[in-house]
Image (tube, rainbow, N blue to C red; front, side, top):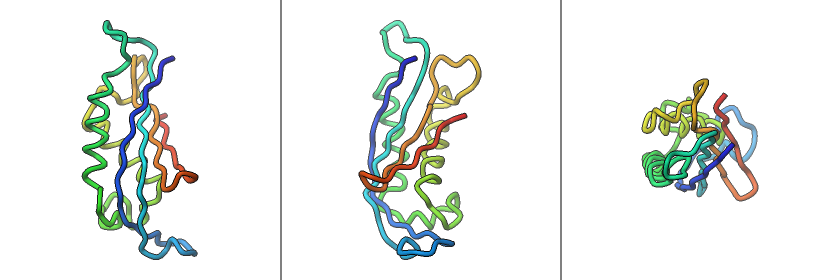
Length: 128
């Protein structure tokens, strides 16, 4: 099994409804995002996936939510948790690179998205 990972970041504000604590107030994070692709076979050039294509798509997705209030994005239903941000990014990468959607027999697929709110707090979405 092979795995490649690319990184991007963005800054955004959010607040969490239905949360009892300081995170229910508007605040911001400098998010770091990792996109992991796994696969079983390399192409003729010896690569699982061209880093450039994955980095470009991940950075485009992160660019769309950079310097926004995530609560304004309908997908999050007013609760833009790190877990929901990870799913959002996963879905948008798959839209940009449909070949990475996990299906049986795939040679390479988008395996996981990690979203770090801080260096010590991470949520991960894994494609099942």
